[in-house]
Image 1 (cartoon, one colour):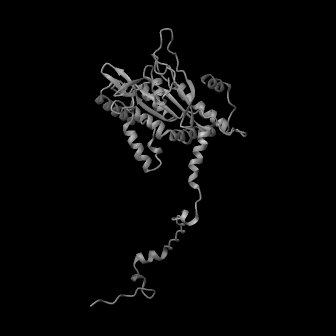
Image 2 (cartoon, one colour; image 1 turned 90 degrees about the vertical axis):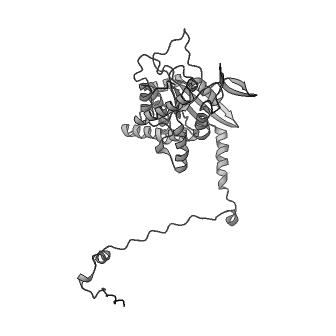
Image 3 (spheres, helix red, strand yellow; image 1 turned 180 degrees about the vertical axis):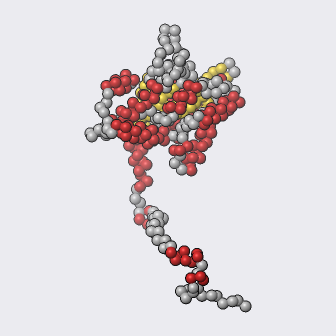
Length: 358
């Protein structure tokens, strides 16, 4: 037989009331959360007729085809690593002059030079103003201490030019964009480890530009050597706290993270460049001829050039531009305005340097 339930309402003594009950009486009831309106599910052409929102993509495409867009790529590395050849291979045209292989009459630059070459490339009705920035003299000296400084200075000068145009009261409708969107850094295929110069450069420049490291002339290494060297390079960069593009912190969502994780695991890409065609199995292919056969540039069994090309041009070109604008440039802009509280006039030195580089 069940015992009757004791009534501990307002007639009970204080001792009869449990502490939890007393506490609950003191804590006010939580305010109900405001009702969030539900997403308008099911609003489609069947209910309200066609709106036309989906045409925005076509509008953007037409505008881009009319105006075109800018893309500025910098190549950095010692002479003889095939920088110019690789860029020419990427864009399948002579967009970069050969700066390697100094003749006897030419002298290796005593300091790092910055040379910018502009081209307009058109494909499928879309125009791209491509600027290739070469850095002859980098890493070619007996003493290469601080040879990264002229490159960092050039990158910051382009941010400064854009900032000064941006703050003008009567600014241009379309500000010329000379900012470096991508820096391909060429690692010598030693098979051992990164040089102190490699680490020093990437440590300083990864904070101001999107760095994509590549192992140059990968055909000088065996498949096993490439795999081992790539792993060693990734480990060294991680130990020294150097992040290359695409940086993990900039992954916007799970889809981005999944895609970029695969890319990061494949980097640095071991590449071979060539602007010469050869006949292989009845097909014309870009490649390098050797005594034992033709190394096909776009064959993933031979090298990872195709991965680099797809990454830089076909999947991440727009993101490279956005990270440059929203992260690197914004960091420079915020620091510049915070440090000075205003902007001084453009110096003659910066203007003259830029004109001479073009």
